[in-house]
Length: 164
Ligand SMILES: [Mg+2]
Image 1 (spheres, rainbow, N blue to C red):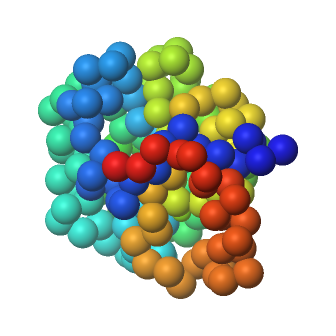
Image 2 (image 1 turned 90 degrees about the horizontal axis):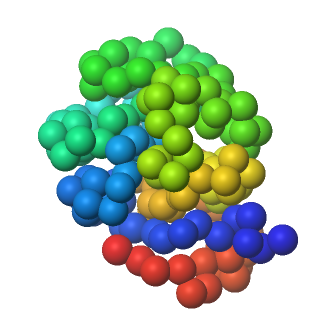
């Protein structure tokens, strides 16, 4: 049971995930969550360093697609600003959005990594879709899923997961 929530690795934030390292081991695409992964929760514009990570990924040969449960107009707006395709209202953890993202990237599951901040949407969804997943710390902790009662569960799930 726990294995469905256990990411392959974790990182302090997306900015410490090095796209050059990903590419060196055969990763050619990143399916990236929006809120609290690429931008602060319900932020309406990307920070400069987030835009920079997308640029670093593209320069390294890693294509990016945004996969978000967010269905607000600014989800598309942010993706447009970052010049990446966006699948919104994705209903993660259901696997359909992940499959759609693979089709958008035109890549096989083994060439793709999922990056997100939530165990119940990003990690579980990636696991159900049989994709590698990196859990990042949320940029802003205003997210209802990131409240205290779930911390013990997170500690259990994260036992033994390598961290960057
Ligand atoms: Mg998120």
